[in-house]
Length: 233
Image 1 (tube, rainbow, N blue to C red):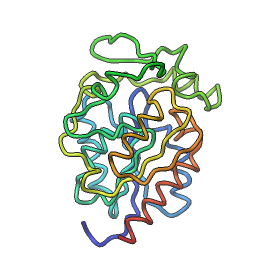
Image 2: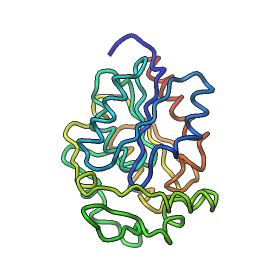
Image 3: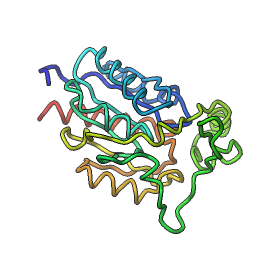
Image 4: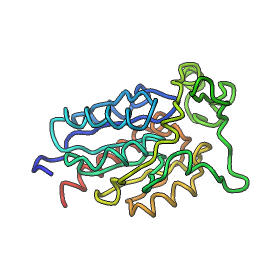
């Protein structure tokens, strides 16, 4: 790693959405002086998404705090071993281990856990049921925006869902994890379990799976904590 302070933040979105959901977090980080890049990862395959993310890391002006939401956690776990990455932040995300994918991590939900309303694949892509999107993904987002998110979904490729982590960044980089206490997509106990396994500095806040949209201040606060944390290491 270079001697630059980690003043660059790279934000990676998850499945079914694009990078626009990071707008609130972006505005706070920019105001606080960070160089911020939002990866428009296509969510077609893990390999493609990692390649898009690594390009953003390469273009960053300094060492990077790499942030992933949901499936983006798999992407940053794989891309975060890049030498320019100083720390990795998971926002209600899958912090995969070697050989794990979103598909393996959601394969055996605990009894009574909410089941995401994923529709059967069409042409190799997945979507969420638009009628159930708000309740499961964005329950605390204003209704008009939650409806827009449902209607502007990005089809999520099966090769992205099934893409396996080969060398998790959290094993070699400091990590942070924000647990969304009211998440109906990834059960909060599963989030805590992954955070603990990763040895992540963990905070829990009230919020849906779309906590990065509904509470950008809490998300930005943890990212800035990570940036300051790596600066002191």
